[in-house]
Length: 173
Image (cartoon, rainbow, N blue to C red; front, side):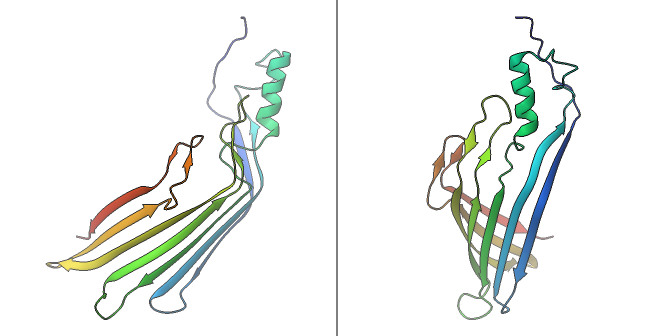
């Protein structure tokens, strides 16, 4: 096989669209955040390792070239949105505690822009978190538990492992 394969750093990618973030705090305890992304264009504009000067434009290479420049960038869904709600307990027995829930959605996207064109179907994932703010001595300390993907969805293509539980302690010095 005389088909030489190589990679050259450089090239240009372009993404255009709308990215909007909204934060609303209707009360001192409640905060809502919404994020919306709609991509009108996300593509490779130039790539020095894939061009007609470098590839003898065989039938197979022409297919590679076309796919590189005609399909959207890898991991660039046309639509994605996130919604998050957080409630802080300001007084009473739960003073210092907080809880929240989030919803993440993305549309179909390609995992790669090579010949295989593997894609991930649209999906919606749910997250939750809770924690407690206090002081240890004079040091502000936050204990937090995060639950990502609480419906335990698995995705072999993105290697999503289902439910992820994460505990964190933050101390501000």
